[in-house]
Each structure stands twice: as C-alpha cells, then as structure tokens.
Length: 320
Ligand code: BG6
Image 1: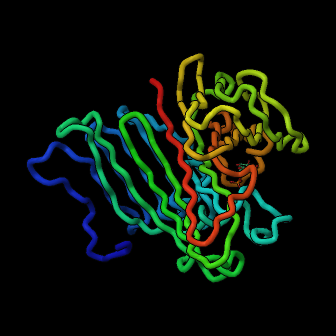
Image 2: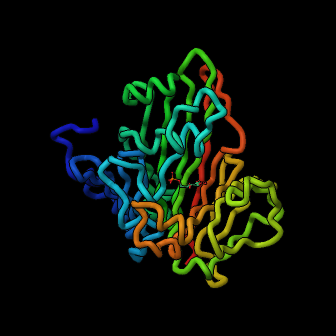
Image 3: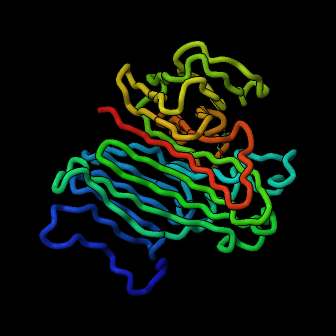
C-alpha cells in the first residue's frame, strides 16, 4: 500500500455520516497526518514511525520538536516520539545487541503504514471520536547491515491513537524466529512545556532510580521532582503503571502519563551543556521548553521465546 502511485491524498469520509477523522499522506507518502473533526491533530513520519506533532483542539502543540531536527531520514528525529528498540542506550556487555547504535534501529528504519481505524462510543458522538493509525516493521525490511547486527526474525506493530484529550502509543513486539531474543523498548516522548523551571513531576515519589548523571548510582525519589540541571534518570516506580506520572506547570496539570506493562520511566532533560553539544538541538535554549518522560521496559531484558509477544503502551492525557 505504501508508495502506491495512485494513493488518494485524503481518505475521505462517507457522505451522510457524522464528520469523521481525516487521514492524509504528504511528502511523497513519507508522512501521515490525522485530524479529528473537533480539530485535534497528529503527524507521523514513516521514518521511525516517529510522531512529530500532536496538537490539541486549539492548535497548541503538545510535543517538542527541535528546529534543527532532521526529518529527511538521515538521522533519528530530535523531538516528538522516537521509538527505542531493541536496546536502550548502548549495551556493550550484552553480546546480542552490542553492535547496535544507541537506542537501536526502530527509530531510524522506514516503517510501513498498515491502515487506520476509527471509533466512537455512540453514533454521532464526535466528542468520543478517535482515530488509530497502525505501523509495521519486520526483519526483512531492515537494511542488510542492521540485519547482520541483529539477526533475528521479529515483527513490530506500533499503534498511535489520537483522541480528543489524549494520545496513546502502543508497541507490540513478536518473536517470529525459532530462537529466543532479548529486547528493550521505550517510548521516548519529548513533552513541550512553557518553562522547565516551573515544572514539577509527581507520581514518582518513593521510586528507585538510576541516576545516569551521577555515576549510575541507585537512589530513591523522596518527593516531587523538579528540574534544575541536566537530568537523566531511569525510574522504576513502585506504584502500578496505571498510576499516572503527572507533569504540572505552575501547579496545574499539563500532562498525565499512564503506562501499560512498562515498568520504567526515563526522565531526561539535557540542560545547557548537553543541548549545546547536540548539532540537531535548536534553539540551544530549547531545553527550557522540553521534558522527556519516557515509559519503557529497559531496566532488564525482555526475553521473548519463539512465537511470544510483548506489548507495552503509554497514554498521555492533556490538562487544560
Ligand atoms: C535518553 C537517555 O533516553 O535519551 C539519555 O536516557 C540520552 O542518556 C537521550 O542522552 C537522548 O539520546 P539520543 O540518542 O537521542 O541523543
């Protein structure tokens, strides 16, 4: 389906039905966008299946995207929601993934658009309308260099669901091989904030974390988290994934992040020096307007036996 020369530019709704979400392709079919009749919208690159824009009904952007992000497939996107698979960071001591680049290959591979589905709880109730876009990536579609570095038969299905007040992204990994493989997954979400110095993150109190900017020491979060310098932490909350991690700005809820089957939350902000050192990070003071809250399964390896599947998801709710 992808790349079909005669693809319609819009998948139009059927006349007579209540207004439906619109799904469109652009940039030579390299981008998919969706708009709800109520105005919320979403934009996704097939490169990495990277969500690069999520706007609310007022057109306000909810994700941070670097002004210098490469959107042409030459580099992982700096911003939006890149997907991390099958390794978080690098794992030089884990033989099976040691050859892979930082954060794996899912964010730098071209995915296939599998289709859209819409739902509403009651006919004509636009308020409940949502649209789900599905993307797929499997071993045969990797370039030969990556296949050689990670020689496993796998299948990934990534679903992105836009609702009026939330965005859900869900990844299913299936082992199609006849041998087991280890993997890690992470949804590397760059949330847009107005002023990082005004942000407080709740829902992580009493969670243990690995502090990547302090020699990977294991610590315990004692209270709400504020960001006042480079922050790079891998949390393992003791509370259930359904308990939200909440991002407050000036005391008001800006985002709630609910996890499904993902036991970790990475919190990352590069602050001044790290941002200065990243060529694709712009503006250089953009760290003031972003906060990565990244649900994942990265503390250990998920070992998938032949035929087994692992599914993890996040739902990001917006506060007004
Ligand atoms: C975070 C990691 O998830 O991603 C950080 O915890 C890392 O250590 C950051 O710096 C960005 O990674 P990258 O590869 O996109 O520059």
